[in-house]
Image (tube, rainbow, N blue to C red):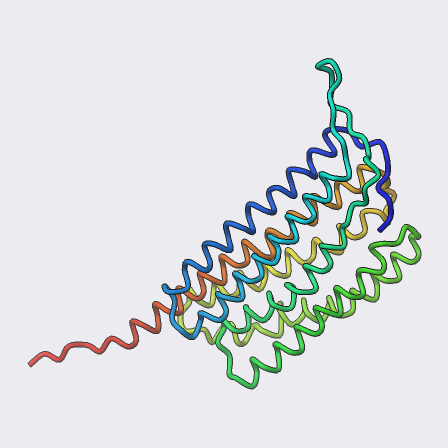
Length: 267
């Protein structure tokens, strides 16, 4: 855990403070919504929706910890009604919570998408293992570079983490295209496509945010952009993605329920 740079402006501190607060609110409210919706989907999709809620509940916990750590790292004061001054307290800012969160939730995000697609069992198990392990490896390889100030070291670990990253993104964008076309209704297929491409889009923000400190930005501004960028990407990849998982489960439940209704015979 490298010490934070001194010299944060109130605007930079406040932007990060509000982004972390937004993360708590988005993840927490999404968790409540997903679990309340469990009785409204068919039994075969409840596992996927349960995992969706687990993902956002884990994220809520970690965002609370990151928020508290950020608040404890600074002292914000106003003297004689003047502008707010931001001072470091000397307490460490523990951003490692993010990587613990990703290590737990990123594989689950992919598994919930596979489950809600309701693929053949063998394909479901195979994809869950492959994508889950690849995504966990991606996070594990990214962390050593994240905590380094040496640009060459950061780029080295970035390149390594991009190998499993590209495999997962390719599988989502191309490998699941045929399975998507086999969904039970055009609406379900459209929602699955949206979930796949939202995952790809939101995930693509992480490598660029990771590179913030590798392209000339430094000091408080780099830290602020990094924290705000990661927070926005997390909300998109978990809370918004979870809403698409719920929409898919609801649509497919409705299709399956309507298929069970037999037409009344006319005598």
